[in-house]
Length: 48
Image (tube, rainbow, N blue to C red; front, side, top):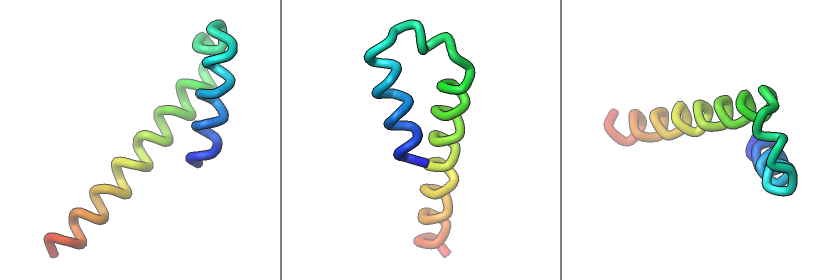
């Protein structure tokens, strides 16, 4: 998932018009949510 996000950001930096694409927004959103859920799972493991 991280590779997909980095690839999308790399393409967007080369083409400013790409920021209008919904796929880029979805990739960033899903990656951010995955990172959040993973971090919460680690935190919960440390606390429990």
